[in-house]
Amino acid sequence: MKKIIFLILACAFTSVFAQVPANYYNSAIGLQGYGLKTQLKNIISNGHVNQGYGELYNGYITTDTDNYYENDGTVLDMYSENPNGTDPYNYTHGNNQCGNQSSEGDCYNREHLMPQSWYNSASPMVADIHHVVPSDGRVNNFRGHLPFGEVSNPDFTSLNGSKRGQNTISGYSGTVFEPIDEFKGDIARIYFYMATRYQNEIASWEDANDGSLPTFDGSSDQVFEDWVLNMLITWHTNDPVSQREIDRNNAAYDYQGNANPFISNPEWVNLVWNPVPDTENPTQPTNLAASNITHNSVDLFWNASTDNVGVIGYDIYRNNVLITTNANNLYIDSNLESATEYTYYVVAKDGASNFSENSNSVTITTLNMPEFIFYEDFNDCATVSDNFVTYSETSNRDWSCFTSFGEDNSGSMQMNGYQEDVLSKDWLISSNLIEFSNYANEKLSVYLIHTYGTMSLGLLYSTDYDGVSDPSLFDWFDMPNVAIDTHDGSSEIAIQQIVNVDISSIPDDAYIAFKYYSNGAPTRWTIDNFNITSELIIGVTDNLLENRITIYPNPSTTNTISIVSEIAFNQIELFNILGQSILKKETLNSNSVTLNNLKAGIYLLRINIENEIVFKRIIIK
Image (cartoon, rainbow, N blue to C red; front, side, top):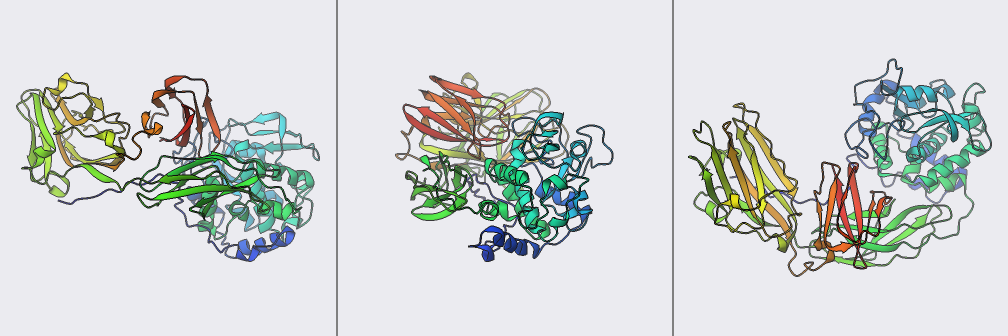
């Protein structure tokens, strides 16, 4: 039999795209002002390949897919995305491209954030994916070639809150278009890219007949009118670089061979356009804490720093060595050694390379390597009873061990209900109690084959079963996060492979069981390669508060999670992956709480309990 050991992977954010090379900006290091801008222009012009206007829709598959909000693989459109709830509509790549449109949600097209009328649709600007983004056709039409600005009394508001109306920023009183706050920094950094990449051309783009006149100042250095420049710097500061922007920048580099330097190095915005020396240090990051410690990873979270201009990131030190710079105050350090001690602290920095004092230090010890706490490959039928026993409530059939029928036709356990002449109620139960209380981060894997009928198979656990009696007399619960398919009734063979599903929310030592109940539409079920892996924690974290808190289901596919604690907690607060607080419940004095309507993503939950703080990672799929 083929034996497979499945690695338990720590959850981390990794880009599927090639990174912008580490030495890409080397020739610009140490420069500032417009000299820095000119050198950046030289860097990002070299290697830029114009892929053509018609190829943009294909490029959007890698640059503008929603893997961040709904995480549903649809087109990510800044004019329709609702970052705090359900989108009003969605587009699938390759479908519903404009044509004609009469209302929002009809179709999407290619929006030039710097309108193409400003440069007579010339190349390569007209096809530069850094600023030509997918957009709902109707909202794109309402924006037209208006400049960006800020609006208080809109004459048009899109379904996600983008607005058109009279500008409220001193310096221009005409009609402008305002995107939602979530994407203002994105658009500002795109404008700084355009002012840099097309430095030699942009001074000629002013035209009295469209929005370029109030946007540009006619120069090749500052490029923007004062009111526009101040607005863009404010947008850039208030909406820092996100993981979505970093991934888009990497994908755009793959697509056309150049990058946006103000995403890779956001501090350069001030070094180019506001090079007045900034000598004020950011405040010290506080309350650095570690949570969700596994054999190879740890979550780090701290209270954000402040700065007179703006914090651009945090240097993270492991064992006094700088390991990375992170844009927000939540970081998952992975690829660590098992059973090893690590000490961390973080330092905030601003765009002028001013640094805060070191945060407090936190020391952790990673857990032991994952190990099999339960494994059965059904390869030797003589020893199956060491791990599993059968029990029949009602049946003329039973679970049986075979030397074939499993994965790669290897040994297997099978419940063959085909052509049964009586109802079947048959159990396959672990021979012994599994001591889940001695382990952490338990993961379950199993290989399933089913054919015929429509009878479901349950995978259950019980904390009160006595190991010998009729199992139907005891309490059994669905295995957390495990969903077994039901056959469609045909004679076709269906295979389902469940790999490393998190079952760590099982509250205590338990028996596990496969339960087959047939009511006349029998199914043949085959089981192979059943295993549970975990991390031994006896004597390490058995008494920690965080092990007395249960979160279920986690991961959740229902946008809902429940938190249950052995000790009443006082306050909970939920943070998104950018470290922003999105929900807070105070003075609870409760042992349980349920959170609803959560968007897909990764969150950090901070729980205040007995004057201590516990962090838990939550995943919503």
